[in-house]
Picture 1: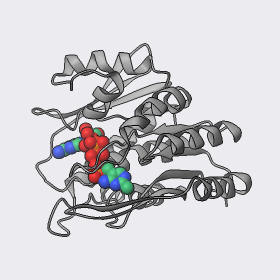
Picture 2 (picture 1 turned 60 degrees about the vertical axis):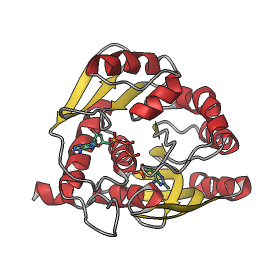
Picture 3 (picture 1 turned 90 degrees about the horizontal axis):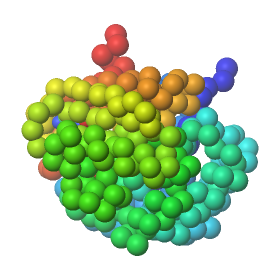
Picture 4 (picture 1 turned 180 degrees about the vertical axis):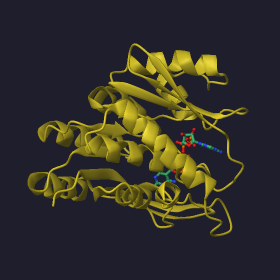
Length: 267
Ligand SMILES: Nc1ncnc2c1ncn2[C@@H]1O[C@H](COP(=O)(O)OP(=O)(O)OP(=O)(O)O)[C@@H](O)[C@H]1O
Ligand SMILES: Cc1ncc(COP(=O)(O)O)c(N)n1
């Protein structure tokens, strides 16, 4: 038996709700074979990030080489990359192994405010990784940083921003509207020509730790299975909505989403 293979290149979240852990749980739930290259360890729980320990370039390169030289991948998802040097390495490796389906979640800060990408690394992200991405999945603050503008506040602002983000080189842009103040949870998918709207009701919960990671991982898993980008994003939106609807009240702070909820919803 074979299985679609997905590699996440991201940070480890000891609390299990975001980063590598969220990605691997998502890959598993979507019936793909998940693999990992860890860029940084974080000591993290529902109350926040208590420590960030970037891995050496040598360690990151060795993990990626081990996976890609033997097993290979059908899609790669990137999350917390932390520094310009790590971004340069990841872009180089993706090119060296001719990786096709690269989903870039431009993770910059954790919900509690901890820095997951150094300021000086934004430039490397724009120059080296966005142009080789199949899909990028910024939230509103990340989109503002990438475009060097103020944060979008309306759907109209988001429409303009999705078009500007596309000019940075990715094949598709998924601009996430989770941070919009009011109204439903709307994301925009832009392919360079047409804008598609992915809209669900806004679910009342504070337990949204790792939503961005989980969503991008679900897109990567579906792409790995050979689905179109539009279909992959639609399935990922269902996956994250169910995960948020059944999010887990674990720990004393912002709890994680429930990665098993999508499968349950299909029963
Ligand atoms: N309360 C909510 N109800 C329903 N959907 C939501 C809610 N909050 C976020 N979403 C959806 O979850 C997905 C992730 O969006 P979000 O904007 O939260 O990402 P993010 O800020 O990158 O996440 P993270 O902070 O984990 O990195 C999007 O599809 C968004 O529309
Ligand atoms: C290792 C790692 N990667 C990504 C996030 C972002 O997730 P969130 O914004 O929900 O905290 C995180 N907290 N930790």
